[in-house]
Length: 174
Ligand SMILES: CC(C)(COP(=O)(O)OP(=O)(O)OC[C@H]1O[C@@H](n2cnc3c(N)ncnc32)[C@H](O)[C@@H]1OP(=O)(O)O)[C@@H](O)C(=O)NCCC(=O)NCCS
Image 1 (tube, rainbow, N blue to C red):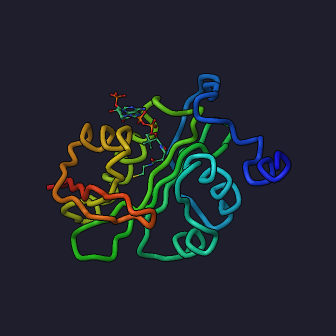
Image 2: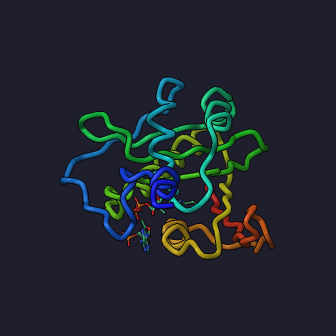
Image 3: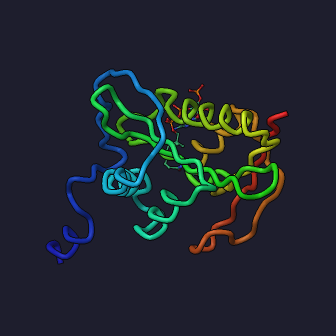
């Protein structure tokens, strides 16, 4: 039984409560490209441990689709430690599908940096607002968004496949 548990829960993924903060470094944001797929998938599993993460097909689609803005945050060693995707195919409204930061690099302003990078790109493309969904239980993400002037506009019942509700949040860019 223990062996099966180990196979299901690889030991190189630290428990959220055991995260050791990464040494201080500086970060920069740059576009994600197709060749980042493997490192992106490894990071995503670590970021969304215990909840849904995109599968390979979804990431491949997001990385090749022209109507998606895809960004990564990297360290000075060029290691990917954060990412986000924004759909830009609906009129003047952009849709953040996901944003995540490696556990050991959290609470250093990286998600804020990714959001503000995307916002600048969206403003230059004349987008008027951004929307996103967030789990009602995801307080860190809700805090992040409300601190960045997103407001809750609707509660979406049973939005996620496990039955959890979502808040639909929106931010005006004009
Ligand atoms: C949500 C997440 C992206 C935040 O990333 P981060 O880089 O740690 O966030 P930042 O350091 O940029 O924080 C910006 C703001 O977010 C809020 N925030 C971030 N982490 C928080 C936490 N653990 N508790 C409460 N608020 C938090 C704060 O308001 C913070 O502002 P402050 O530093 O002035 O207090 C990160 O926790 C994560 O990857 N979580 C797992 C994936 C996920 O849930 N993604 C969102 C899906 S909708």
